[in-house]
Length: 186
Image 1 (cartoon, rainbow, N blue to C red):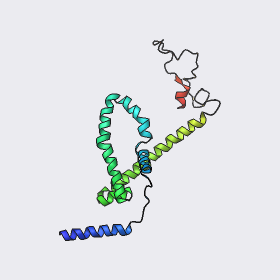
Image 2 (cartoon, rainbow, N blue to C red):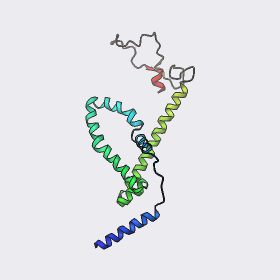
Image 3 (cartoon, rainbow, N blue to C red):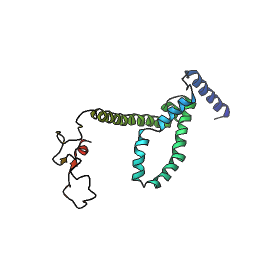
Image 4 (spheres, rainbow, N blue to C red):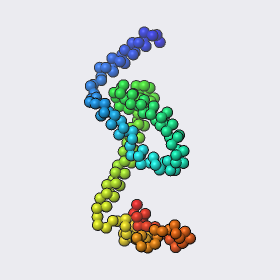
């Protein structure tokens, strides 16, 4: 293929892109864009699971590889995705398809991951709303064993039953198999 042919193809693609590109909205202020990006990047999974991951994977020693991966993999990939979206001003499938037709699959994967993540967050929001509304009742459902879902080993802990001082009686084996009402509820 000659250089002239390549240049003509680029001109046709660019001309087709300019003619079919309808005007799109832009951010009015940089602060709007920054807050939107922070809201997208720092979500519930980061805030909720990060302490658990630190505890499970070695505490402070986990912070070193985590920070390195965020700095050298997470931030560059995130910046690349933002840059491509801003440059092409198209959706995920179209943007990746313009780079390489085989990369349309990446765009579809991005959409599917966002779709599945939305289901996860909707369930968490429903749980939070359920527990929030149940906490306004006079009798908390997770405080007693008088529900049909409670098992035989359910017990209602009280302030004076002595079970709150398990450290003082480490050899007491009478509580084996006992589950609190709150554990059975949740």
